[in-house]
Amino acid sequence: MRILGLDVGSTYIKVALFENERLTLLERDKTSYQPLERCLQYINKYKPDQVVATGDTCQENCVSL
Image (cartoon, rainbow, N blue to C red; front, side, top):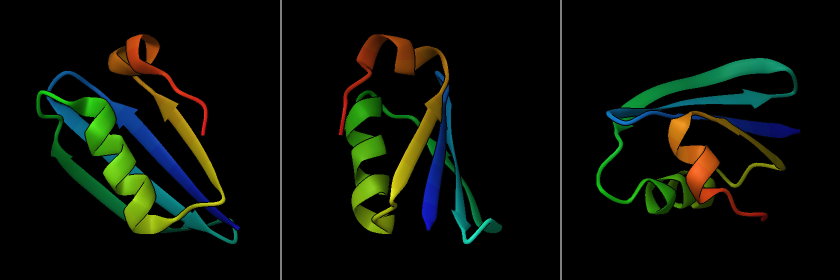
């Protein structure tokens, strides 16, 4: 199972990918002016089974996938 964790802040998006309960990736990227679009790019790139998101921007821009 692949789980993608996103921490969406005003300056950076931090990304963690877990595969079969093991951390396999950590990334940090600029949030940009379109944080939801940036999160969707990560989801499309890593194709997780589950997404967990946190952060100030998530509260305002949350969507169900």
